Image 1 (cartoon, rainbow, N blue to C red):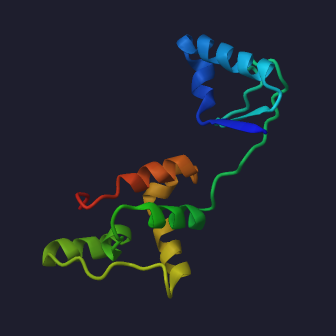
Image 2 (cartoon, rainbow, N blue to C red; image 1 turned 120 degrees about the vertical axis):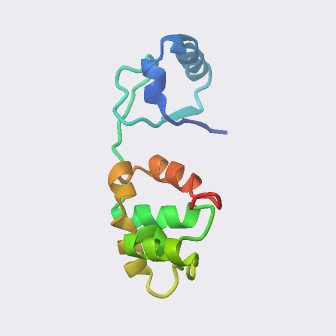
Length: 144
């Protein structure tokens, strides 16, 4: 049987002062178990990781703006409205008190994703999936 252990954000471990016991535990596990593989995700290569094995770096490019917009739309905790992506619609919704119909991914999906991808949020998150998921988790019913 083979085992895969995935550690997300491993670059934080490399920079942390108290990480020595974690690296030691991982080294011991790798030395004791030949069927164990590690998958370390980080924002930069981890060639300096104190492990008794070869570290192979594989760069995963950021998501395209449309893919990032699709990920946000699918993971948001409430429907998205035109007011969420269009400042003019936001002003009209706040003055009338009516949100309008929720935007849907069916039908004019490409147009919707292109409009959503133009939102300043996507310039801030830069297509990084973790950042997009974090932003989506903050789109709740309580968010105006």
